Each structure stands twice: as structure tokens, then as C-alpha cells.
Image 1 (cartoon, rainbow, N blue to C red):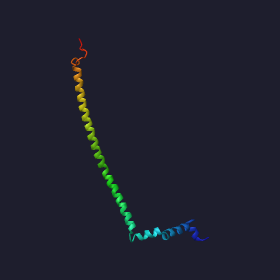
Image 2 (cartoon, rainbow, N blue to C red):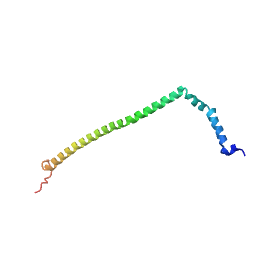
Image 3 (cartoon, rainbow, N blue to C red):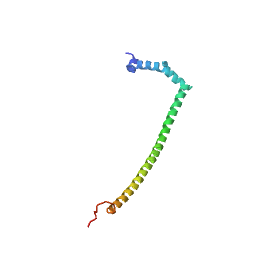
Image 4 (tube, helix red, strand yellow):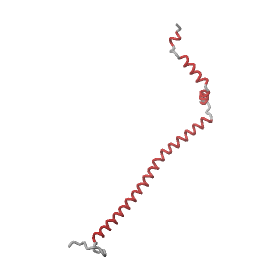
Length: 116
């Protein structure tokens, strides 16, 4: 019984052969090894695009709260104007109600409803 078979688990020879084929035989791995010494224009372009995308996303995250703050200000101003209009309308209704309740006999042709 050879000692090599005992020390090595079943199937490990095939794994080593596949690993050698991938690391030394495949073009993407050779390009990756060469890219460390000299970056290609494609790599620099991809890096620049990724950087620009990240920068744009960060800018959007910074601007979003500012946009929401401005929307809140606008909404608050609209609500404040609505409240002022409602208060003015309420004052007019109260004044009209007082006039109508104080003078039913002063309206021409109105029936006399004074107690008596």
C-alpha cells in the first residue's frame, strides 16, 4: 500500500489539477496577474465610473434631506395660510351670527318673534 494514497484524501489530485488549470491556464487570471504591474485603460475606466457612481449616490443622499426640509417648509407655510383663512372665515361667521340673532325684527317683512 503506497503512503501517498494514505496521506492524501480521495479526490485531492483532481482538485489540484483543476486549480493549476484555472490559475495558470485561464486568460482572466493571467490578465489579473499582469494588471498589478500595469493597470489597463479598461481597469482605469471601470474604476473612474465606479467612483463617479459612488460620488453621485453620496451627493443624492446629502441632497435628499435638504429637499425634504424645503418641502416641509412649503407645506408648513400652506398650512399656516389655511389656518389664517379659516380663522378669518370664523370671525366673519361669528359676526354674521351675532347680527342675525340681535335683529330679527329689523328685517323687513320678517314675522315678529319677540317674546311677549
